[in-house]
Structure formats: structure tokens, C-alpha cells
Amino acid sequence: MEKYHRQGISKQMILFEIIRAKQAGLDFISVSFGYERELSDFWMACRFKVVRHKNK
Image 1 (spheres, rainbow, N blue to C red):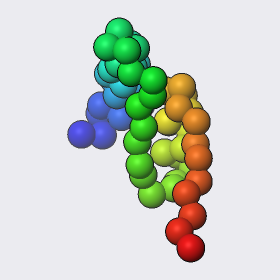
Image 2: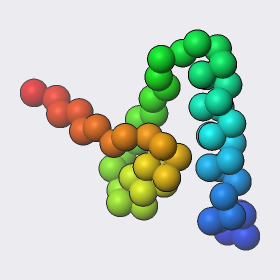
Image 3: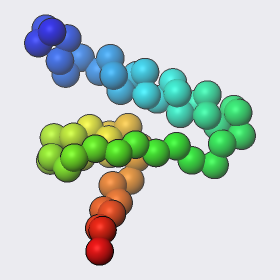
Image 4: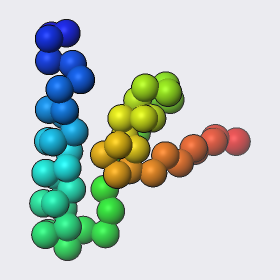
């Protein structure tokens, strides 16, 4: 699977889903992930904002 890494395939799929969500009238979509710098960079490149949730 390494040969498919960093080719923009996932980003294209996510951006397509963002467009579909807007067309469906959705206000937002969200994801949840264990924080790693690489994942954070990926989601920000897909137009997401990283928000930290902290449990008390």
C-alpha cells in the first residue's frame, strides 16, 4: 500500500465529500483522530480545522 501514499487520493475523496455535504445543505462535517502531526497536517490540507477536545 505504500505506493499509494502521498498521491493525493484521499484528499481528493474527502474534498469530493465536502462538496456533496454542502450540496446536501449540511452545516459541517467532522472527523475524530488520535493526534499526530502528520494526521493534523493532512486534515488541515483538507480544509478542516483541528480542535482539541479535552475530557475532564
